[in-house]
Image (cartoon, rainbow, N blue to C red; front, side, top):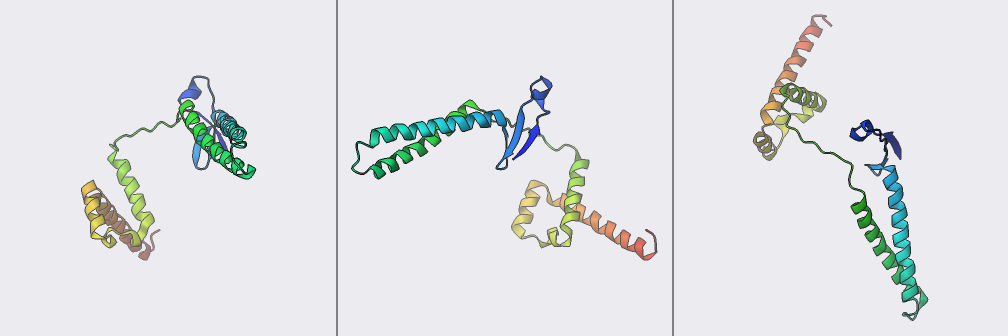
Length: 164
């Protein structure tokens, strides 16, 4: 579990919630603590109530306990719904159109260099090429590959002349 401080919107207002990474998600540690307590109380409470009511109704005590465990699992689901209602997500998703063509070109150039020749658009299946053209990405990647090939030729030529 990794812990981190929030320097976002709420931190400027004087609040400093602590976040932790749990199973690949970022959570507020106070809400996580309350969720654990609520989950334990609701699920164990459901189990105990079911055990008290079902034990006298079934012929075997083991069957009553098994049914009570199922009710306790249902209590876990109820506790999850309660916590989801009480503790809203903290994420703020902002979608913005990439209007900076220079940044987009730089990122695509970086992808082309990292992929190398095995990631060439010439090796892509026809349906992928069609999708890339439909999304307006094919020409961007083709241009980046052409620039990369030109740069490699220039570097090889400079290297053969002894220029570093």
